Length: 124
Ligand SMILES: CC(C)(COP(=O)(O)OP(=O)(O)OC[C@H]1O[C@@H](n2cnc3c(N)ncnc32)[C@H](O)[C@@H]1OP(=O)(O)O)[C@@H](O)C(=O)NCCC(=O)NCCS
Image 1 (cartoon, rainbow, N blue to C red):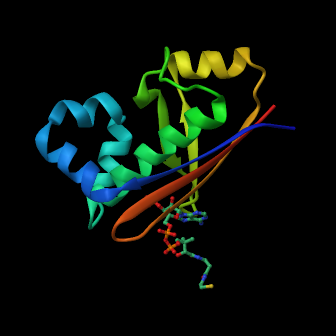
Image 2 (image 1 turned 180 degrees about the vertical axis):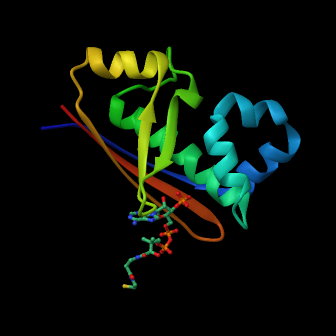
């Protein structure tokens, strides 16, 4: 059954500004794999913004108002061989997911030149 849904929309310019201002922002929020993926793209900020939206959408689906014990890089966006994105959890985020008897996460991402959006469904 569906345990939660979450969505988020992010202004790409806001993320681009944060990335320009602080290397700490990048490494505090994104995993090494996410940084590698985004920096290979034509417009890295668009993909960083999408990953930010994924983390926010996941936390909404999970039911958290605040980040709590979760470290943001532990909520990582990866891709299968077709390019379809999925969320890979690690550390505390994975532990708490299992403790709640959650089983599956569904993810969809989209972006325009201005905005990135993500939609997450968690099942249990
Ligand atoms: C891959 C595809 C879904 C991307 O859609 P898009 O409109 O070009 O771009 P969007 O901004 O909406 O989506 C991009 C995101 O789609 C996701 N995506 C990529 N391949 C995907 C796939 N096979 N399945 C689901 N999602 C996919 C990625 O997360 C990507 O974002 P990211 O690179 O930051 O992770 C699209 O190009 C495609 O192949 N569509 C198939 C259907 C089709 O041919 N439609 C033609 C018009 S009807």
